Length: 183
Length: 330
Image: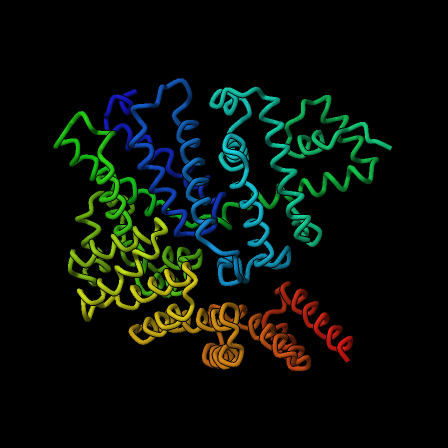
């Protein structure tokens, strides 16, 4: 409430409290460290700009996650437009030498890049719902409250998205070779 | 025969979104139906792709995140003093300044030499972040709250003049916003203005990145060469050589030059950061040259050095295909 009224200290405190979760959402959505920093920064700027528009009809965290997801999707879509297809140079070095018995770094990176490509190309409303569920761990009920859609409509969006990713990976011949880790 | 359980139910079951009754039905059916079992496995695999463990992804650190928040709130606070009613509505130019400040701040948080090397590569990746976490001497306290404190860090002292910081932050902002053409114009101006600057290698590396993003490969090679010539850091030189080799082969198809560069790299950097990728390039160079035996020998060497790399399988297949094509050609 204080943050909504323009108390910067209160807002800063809120952001500090939630910053790890925001970091985790961003980390789930992109592996590019530069992009992660950009998204985080733009998210905070967007929060500063939109705080007066926060109606308080949902949890601050849900509102913040929604902003994070949307900023991430917009930034990633821009990045995709400006980038050519991923090449081997873009394999994050931390993948190399780790966990290679499961699947090679390059394949992992490639699969994730393809999956995110599908996500960023989903229709506007769908990609937000999809990202809130899979990257921000937001419940169906919370998403329903935020978007005004029914639970079944949300599940349909999630299914369509997952199916699109599976089909895309299958078409690229990536899914068959993918070995599930032994958990 | 059509399955009684629709595909959607299998995906929802995989995502734990079915109620108990429907979940039990789906579970029983999947256990007895090969086709649905296959669908379920594929759904699981694609879910796994989306939900990588955080340890594989975590690159932002608390220091960086808190630094971003602090940096933006400093701008915001000064705005509050000037016009209290506009706390959350400062004008767009304010965002520009704030973002530029934060970019400068973020640059200040990173170990400069490592950062430069990875600018050469075209992106700062996780190794850099991980390396920074281990070795960055720049920020000792995660509760750094003002830019003044950030300026006290060794990197800030190292780069001295604040105008240079501001100028360069503006360039980084252009790059971040995808304005590569503007950055291509701005970087040489920056270099001319700050002659003898000690971050020329970073500027040239960024210039090379901008050329790469705009597909100006020859100019990119020139910028990489300058980054390499102006740096005191061997990692920057190594990265520039790797990226040069990659461009020569992949983008410009200058196979001979690429081969020479790759061999230089492999000889010069026995424990190089991009050694695995250089091997991959070399095998592909041999394939492009249709040197079947040499491709196999290179692959063998690659497997010896990187026994766990699964890309070897792909390379093996590529060599096999080349062999088949050659046989068919005869």
